[in-house]
Image (cartoon, rainbow, N blue to C red; front, side):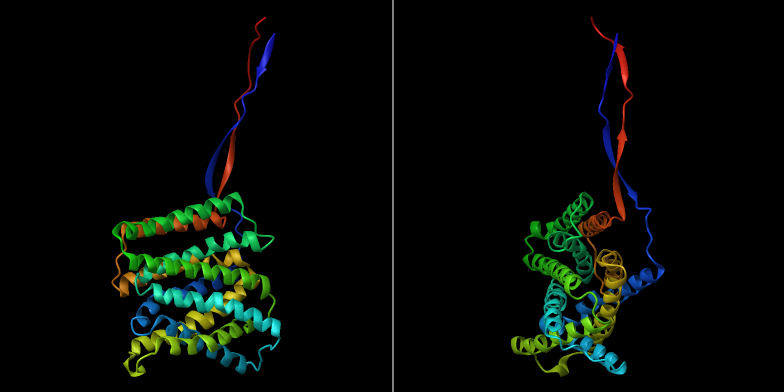
Length: 330
């Protein structure tokens, strides 16, 4: 007589590149264009914030962007909606997508390098994934997203660790400010996806920027009591104009087009490209140096983003051991 011995299968997890990549060429080109518009923003902020206060810089940037989009709408002979619900929603979205993060990025870059700020901006999709689980019914957290989010925040801790050990409170506050800006961006993305999808092209970003500039710019003048504007250099003024026209107005036209055609997850891929611009431009033009912790931390954050968004997936590989037979004892 023989009896069968069943040995349960064991599992191993391996990362692999997702083969189901059906992104359209048009969407990829728009994404590359968006990253190109956003990429230099961190270097330009570093230039402008040396002469303009963070709150006023945010107000100027948003006002320039609002005027640019209004001019485009006027040229197309289009008018903004005066629907109260629409105006309320764009006001809330503008607060979290423009007013808060722009001000925090400006303030944070007074204490940290533009390259590091661009890297920390990569936390936005990780925050978005977490918030989407609670506020968007069809975007629940999966094991894949959880692992990616954990990896990403591990990279953030590594970035912060040198400042914690060295007791550099200013640099630490700068890192925290930029991280909070990324969190605010995430809130803006979630809110826009829930309440602003389906609006006429350009109307949502134009209304957001216009309403935000109406209260942010006067607030900056009141709180910051700016000095004479004759003291502002052409470099700082040019940085504000480029930030407003290209890094905000044109960027958010593409932002909403990508959100409409490809969704929030695809849109978040832009953060893979933006830090490349930020690091290269900061190193070449601003003479910024990257520490080992920054390089490793950035790599870990990037890995977390790739895993969380499914670019890199891990799968179970079952190892089943053959059934063995041995004589049964009488």
